Image (tube, rainbow, N blue to C red):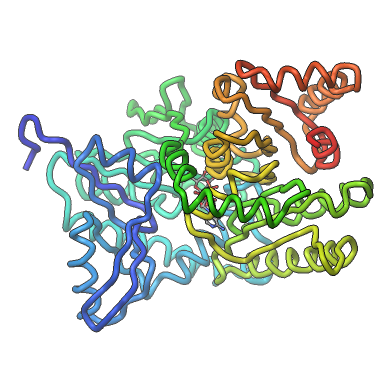
Length: 483
Ligand code: ADQ
């Protein structure tokens, strides 16, 4: 059935995970909570939206599955049950193989991945999981619906959908970076995945660079033609475009004004009184550069004894993807560094690093963002990085500094223009080697930051109409200049 005149078109948003958390409370009863987010609030206004995805829990009995499906239907969510393939599909192929390649790390070399048998099983599970998504979509599809597939978990879905019905309008959006062809081509199934994605009508990326990498990879690996519109293959055009994701800033601004949150801010300020607070909020993922952040901070304390006991780094690092060996390794490495740095520079009454392996609730997250003097985002690669936007949104009253890795997609969006009215000092930097052009720009800024002109810089920062973007080379330099 096509939508009647005046009706909003129906949009099926398909992602690995539904935007809902589900807890079983009885044999056939469930407690559900919708996770708010930019995507959820953005699309629901324009379309009659239904969500399709894994509900985040394993359910093996039919009674439980039926009850969960019924409860989810009230929230316009449709579950895809992945129990039998989940481990090999999600921990194996998606996060053990695709994720590191998309983040420029190449194909993992450890024992876990180097046998053909393991990767073949994971690849088969990936395809099977994409077929399970297809089956659920077929059961719910009506003529005229638009199907919007999300992320690297669902790269075969566009092809399966078009094989089922070539008239279905299909979009695919990648939330991670897309690497250069030199990295991408290390993936054994490189051509099949690209060919599938190209069957979609529209492909979206966070940044121009990711889109450009994708187009040139298709040209090099498949021999298709890349044009300004997208990719042309045998007369058919797949449009490729850039859609940087955002947040709902009003939600953060409103929350920062709640009495309960103001009280939390006051308690935090009291707790850290007399100290500058550097904040990190990340999933505990190797792409977020948490070990590099700690090493940079250690160097800063080593070289600036006057700052010891006057600055604290609060890192909220929610554990993630525990089933993937690489994630367990990074967790162990991070814990080792925290112990070493606190042991070297702490005292009985004061620790330089407060590392928490947990998620914090939304109100407390806003309170932390609002009181932080510095937000430190050190991603080695990141599709966008919403944390950097969230911090800026919470800075209405205070004037914190965002230190943002140039390797996060947000580094391209958070330009001076975007923040002109916010009176904020943005520092783009990275704890590591810089590319040659970046190095030249860094030198330029070093000049501007010499003591004679530092006063001018401070005056600019205090001018409500000006935002200054400073590029700096190391964590040590950055922190010296901020304080
Ligand atoms: P993520 O890698 O998860 O997202 P990010 O964009 O920063 O990274 O989003 C994380 C979200 O989780 C933020 O909204 C943040 O507030 C929340 N969060 C993180 N740690 C938390 C904690 N300890 N407690 C509470 N909340 C926490 C992927 C890509 C990104 C891309 C997004 C959206 O890797 O590059 O920006 O998708 O496309």
